[in-house]
Length: 261
Image (cartoon, rainbow, N blue to C red; front, top):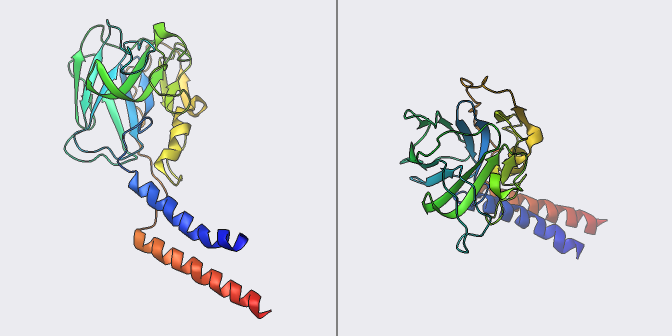
């Protein structure tokens, strides 16, 4: 049994690395994560943790979700703003950080792609208790997949201030709960050295890796960190084949040495 396990390890390693490559274009919870949230400037930044296909449309909404599941009565309330971002004609590579600036004024912009307001009611992020959702959908009011969320309410427990119930998101994993009344928050953890982009997801969602301040009005001109995230290089398929062959040869030599004793 131990010999079979030893023989399978190179193939399991190769399969795992190939799986990491094949999942590069997934669009699911955690593929985008907030890395900054600024209620003074009314802007935010996000990191792509998977390659985003060209012309991906993502909606943002700071209306509250009612807590029911998509397709089973789930809906946003009204009275606040919603936005549409189209990523542009090129693939956005995993690790890229996108900045959304001055979202409450006509000059609003994204550092990549096209960013527009589709609901201008009560523009601006609240410094006391607001939740911002990012999701795929057929329109700003019809989400199909929630990607991530951030709140400065301290938690996502209250429907009146924004809940994760019915969204499929999990606080501390695919959504980030900043402490109550946070005017400004920014991820300050590592951005390099991990083996996969997905490994950054729980780090970005962990608010112990954030700088957060509740001082009102001092971050209006603050420029967030837009340094990209990077990973250790994954071997090419040809290199994987060589690795597997090398492991097999090493195992053969070891067995022959044992048999020769």
